[in-house]
Length: 483
Image: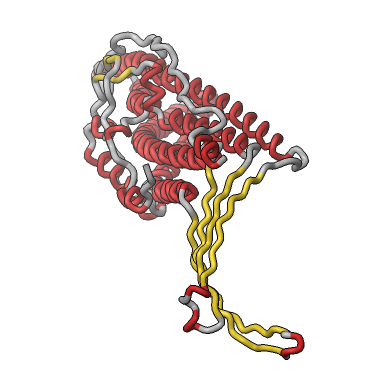
């Protein structure tokens, strides 16, 4: 019987996990070979390169020492990353604890007791009994229930590992995007304040003309309405700007008042000239969220095996060896020797359907994990496709906005020349200046979109985490697992 049990211990019931097959290597989207280019800051053409790798420090591609320094600062100080490191350490320790079930349990005990015994006609005796034993027990993992439980714990640790990488990716991309948005908002605020000044000048001139009979009350009211409308846009921009700086401060792991860095100038940034395009089979190994859900699928599969193993018999071997004597001097004599060897077979017979229900629940959870993995894949492919579409479309938008800004600038130059020659009024010059500033405002937003689109693509493709070692060495040092 024991031989049969040992042979059974080499198998494990339940499904053996296999990673889902990668999708076919068809293109995620069909971007052009090169984006539109425009003669303005951030308007360089970007080339799409299939299979191009992403550096682990992709943010350095923008050529901004300030961005690089802030990202490094955030990676060192953000508490969300510290929490992710600790969660990974917890998962690894749980895996290591589960592996302890592969080994026998050994315990030692020593029990001195004072006893009184009725000896009948001989009277009553009062004596001390000293007992010391070493107990060993070992549960044979005949149907792989323990192995499946440890497999599940290991998959949970893998999930936390990928969640850690997702946290690093989210922090770095969100921080860079926030810095770019902050820069765009600052430039829009500057342009809006200039526009407000121009509208005030136009209103002042219109009021003067009205006083002289050269303009109507309707003209004055129209200028007042235009000025009020432009002023109304400023508080919203200022609010967004302040909130972006507060957001950056949080990413850096500090309070809003602790962030005093100057706003980055978009004109100082370099737009990466080459952008990667990944095929689906490569993307599924690059995205931390896909890998995390694959680990959850693995854990659910192992849980089915553990629930199935609980339906089968459990075999336990136990032994004890010890000494027992009334006198300490007799404890180690042959007469004080005590020992036992036992084997236990336990088979569930009736538990009200609990075990079968748990097995069915585990199978349902596996179906849920498979569906969530598929949904994560679809979301990832959508993210990449959306980023590619945005890069191409926003490049064309920037080219159109740059052309509109150049046209408005040329019109302003003509208006200035005409005003200098006395061929037009100052109000006409102000209107040309307003048109130019409005075009400049739109150009700033379009310019920022080119940079944020690039960040979104790096995020959608996984951010190059495979070129970094984001796990704290202390986590691996403290939480080694058995082979």
